[in-house]
Length: 342
Image (tube, rainbow, N blue to C red; front, top):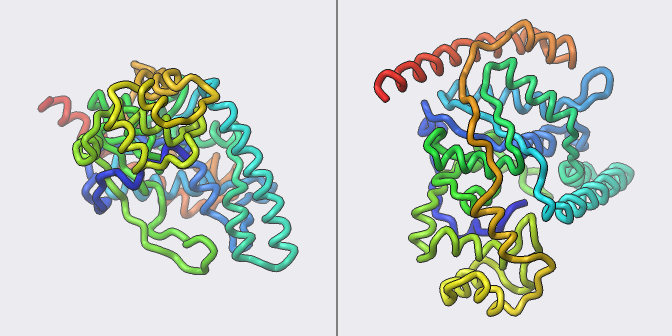
C-alpha cells in the first residue's frame, strides 16, 4: 500500500514512447500483485492451466513486458528479499484482508453478484514463493535483468535510480520517493485501461512520471522531512497518527526542525521507535552490485515453460518471443553505443 503522499506529488502524464531507450527498475512483487488482481475472469476466477495452477501472473508478466519492450522500454525487475522486522504487523494485516476478501468473493458468487465477486477476488490475490520463482525464471528466459534485493525491492530500485544506473523506479506506491528515487514511474505495467471499483466500466490509464526534486520544491520540504511526513501519516512499518493526513503532516514538519519535534507536536503515540522507521527510508538495506545485462531470449525455454508447462498458446508465445528477440538485439546495440560514447 505504501505511504499516502500522492496528493502532494508533482507528476505528469506521459506517453509510453517518452520512455523509449530508458532502463526502468520495476518493483517485481508490486507488478505481480497487479497481474494477479487484474487478470481474471468476469466472476473473479484467475487464469489457470489444465492442472488448476494460477497463471495470471505469468500471462501479465510475459505479454505486458513484451509490450514494454515493443515500445523501446528496457525493463529490469527487482524482487523483495527479507522484509524488515517492523513490517511483520503489516504483513499479518494484509493476510487477514486477503482472507476476508476470499470469503466475500465466495458469498458474492453464491448470490450471483458478479461485479462484487470480481472486486473481492482481486483483493484476495495471494502471491506465493513459487509464483515469484516462476516469474524470475520467465524473466531470465526472456533475457531480462533480474535483481534480488536484500530487503525491500522498492529500496533497491530507488538506489539504482539514485546511482543513475536506471532512469526511474517503477511502482504503484510512492515509497520510492521517500527512499530517494529521483524519478518514479507509475502505471507502467498496467494495461491501457483500469476497471472502476463497483462499476462495469473502465478508465483509461497512462503512465505518470513523478519527479522527487520538483515534489520537494513545490512543497517547500527536504527529502528527510518527506520521510518525517511518512512516519506521521503511517507506513508499512508503523501506524500513523489518527487524524493526520498528507496536508496536516506537511504543515507539521514545516514547523519542526527534527523528527522528534514533529512526533511530539503530532500528539500521537507510536508503537515503534519513529527514528527506526525513518532509518528504513533514509538508510535502507540494498545490494551495491547487480547486473543490468540484456540477453537474447531462450525461445525453446519459453515454449517449455509457458506452452508445455502451463498450456499457453504455442503460436502466440513463439510469435511474442520472436518479437522480443528483435528488441533484445536493439537493447544490446544501445548498450554498446552507451559504452562507446559514455
